[in-house]
Image 1 (tube, rainbow, N blue to C red):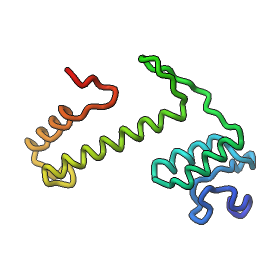
Image 2: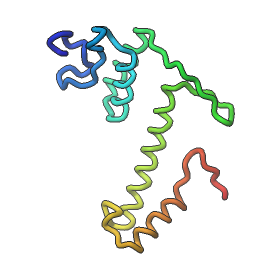
Image 3: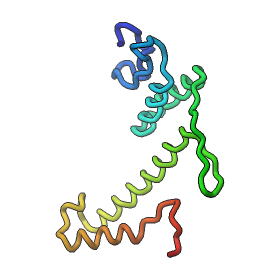
Image 4: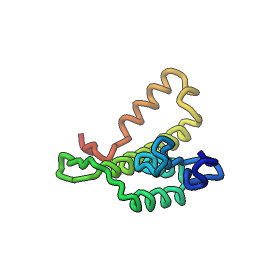
Length: 135
């Protein structure tokens, strides 16, 4: 693709990462641009994420799904990833702290009883944003 379309085919051409040109249509593809933005955000390529956002806007790409939550909050499809990513990072940090508390790098290092206690503690103490804190 690099030979055929040049550096514009990728948002990170030197690494041949984040393709945005569809080889069948030979043009920018909004789905590929969107996927590049998501992957860039997942893997902390902030400059690539910004490039993808600009390209997405430049080519008038749109997310077509709007969602209304039970509380009346309206979000667009592309915002879902941001919501899940933030909570996932917070959960990973919480989980890592629990592993440190138990002095292990993985729950697999715990014996059966400690592993059960570990996961019960995780379930008891982790509260997702949509969970009611009082039970």
